Length: 157
Ligand code: FES
Ligand code: FES
Image: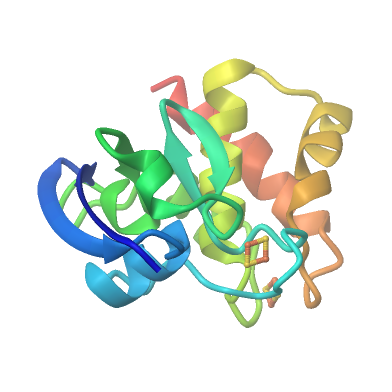
């Protein structure tokens, strides 16, 4: 398999790496950049635990090749807080008990932020429909939906 050098900005930092052209973006992020907050929960592009932000859109990073992201800006769960200050959506998940084991949470939060960028005041139906691509095996989703509604309010400032 051919190698290629790519330049990519992750969480505001530039990286230049020579990689195998069949390396998935999630493996690039976790193995090359050593950011392990984005999780791998399936091998079928269904669970959403690997989601990252690409131009304010949530992207399943297991479904694209790293070389397709040459020149791109990506934000992972590690890049959304302001130093020690949690992102408002992270605060809301904590306050509304939007997680249990936490495995799906990075993807849920990234997905929620993308939704609010597109629709600042989502209805419960909007939130539930948007979460179609994010699976949680613990919570039953009730508190996740509450967390996202509360997070949307907080993000208005
Ligand atoms: S690991 Fe990407 S969707 Fe499941
Ligand atoms: S909190 Fe455990 S999978 Fe969602």
